[in-house]
Amino acid sequence: MSLRAFKQYLELLKYSGLTSLVTPFDKIKINVQKSTSQSDDENVKLPAQIICPVDSVPKSDQKYDELGLQKIREKLQFCSKCPLSKNRLKLVYGEGLQSAKIMIIGEAPGAEENITGRPFVGEAGKLLTKMLQAININREQVYITNMVKCRPPGNRNPLPEEISECMPFLLQQIRIIKPQVILLFGKVAITSLLKMNKAIDIFREEQPFHFEDIPVWLTYHPSALLRNPDLKKAAWVDLQRFRDFILEKKII
Image (cartoon, rainbow, N blue to C red; front, top):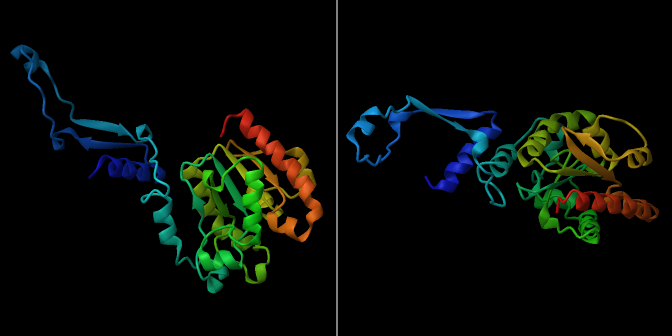
């Protein structure tokens, strides 16, 4: 096993909830250089076991950790926990760096996302890319996902019970990626993650919020901006505030 593969294996164990590994010391082959003093060698006592803290293992730098998000996505591609799976062509799990400092969460996949299996690739996705570029963020720098991983029929909003079934997968993504900041797009994503129900303009005035100690910013969903261009000015204000925050915190 290569060093990288070993690190990825330990990282996977950490995500599974393990904090340390204990192994019998006599199972490990170690070449010990003998001391010039025989008495010193005789006084050496090897421990019965060693403990390796899993947190001491650095995160891998692969775009998709083959033992992390990618493996989980493969296991979920045949998920049938809610009715959305019946019309699914491809699961839209998420896309981006596992080490991303910024995580973007939208509402649900659309028609093109359902075909490609990638989030935000339709017209709303093209606008999202432009919105990020306007605040000097490349799409490749962030991790993008949605509240639910399958397309609701007719592009309707996902139902509360559908979001509830998908929420554990989203929480798993957040805890694996450990972003330094989350950016929410759309009221469905906002109310579902923050567990509060207010008018989106009130949310905008009160931001940032926090989720599991992670700062959370928010604005209108790109699809809402396409339907109502008058909202673009307000969204631009939100993005500028978000940009100022990440620059101040030196997130990028």
